[in-house]
Amino acid sequence: MLLYLRIADRNGIIDRPNARSSHSIHTIRGGGIIFPLAMAFEYAFSGFHYGWFILGLVLISAISFLDDLKPQDAKLRFSVHLIAVALLFYQLNLFNFPWYLIVVALIFVIGSINAVNFMDGINGITGGYALLTLLTLLYINFNETPFVDQMTLTVAMLAVLVFNFFNFRKNARCFAGDVGSVSIAFIVLFFILKLMIATHDLTYILLLLVYGWDVVSTIFFRLIRKENISEAHRTHFYQFLANEKKIPHLNVAIGYCVVQLGVNIWLICCSINNLSYLALILIITGTFIVVLRLIIQGKGQLIYRNHAANS
Image 1 (spheres, helix red, strand yellow):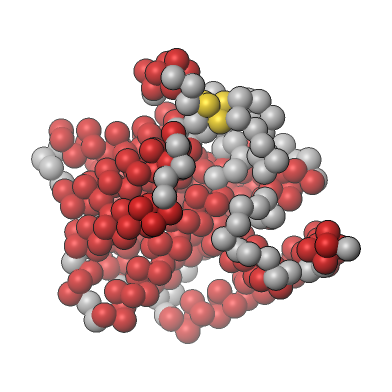
Image 2 (cartoon, rainbow, N blue to C red):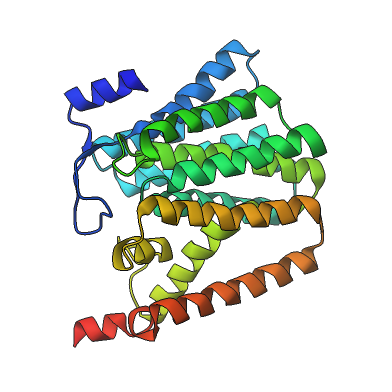
């Protein structure tokens, strides 16, 4: 990581603040490159486990790092993402499942990768959330259901710890960049899907509940305001808390992690493994976040903001 920071500094791989930024100083971009590098080293030194997954990770990380350096064509990025996800599915033997389940899994993975990328906007939130998720998966793997090589999980967690040392602070030394947010999403999704397949329990998607509802509720309100959801913005709930409410970035990141920790503990202690209960949980929590945002942010910002701007 120290070597990358030196190289990035010398070559101007810097994140410069703009109108959508939640930071105000120039910061090294792409520090999340440590995630795919750590997994590649682990692959080489631990018996070449999960080769197709690693190949997919290298591909999706490479195009994301290039995008950090210079914006790449959207069609090229999407094509590489599809190839990487196909390799991930091949590693997990998902192509043996019915086609409709493969389509659902594809939508879930592509959507989740983009969600993690969208949520990477303030110091500590990506590293903190990833660390919590990996620690939860490590606990499940060690104490509940062994579903993956323990060292692979451990190395991913250690890479996140190193990244957090440089990012989880008021003035971060580096940001994850697209290479970091996309690659850690790819890594975490590999573990979660592997856990779901091993346990036949879809409720483990709740490990991404807090991130998921921030993104989904933001898209919901943007559609109500008739905004183009493909355009860049900074209307996520965490961005409102950090930018409008002026809550320190690390406090917002910790708050998100604490809420997700509560969900993870409940998920481990009260394993439900029931699709009806899962649907009910998603409906209740989804309704809660929409109502919560309406109370805290108000209709003027969430529903009428675009109309007010146009007038």
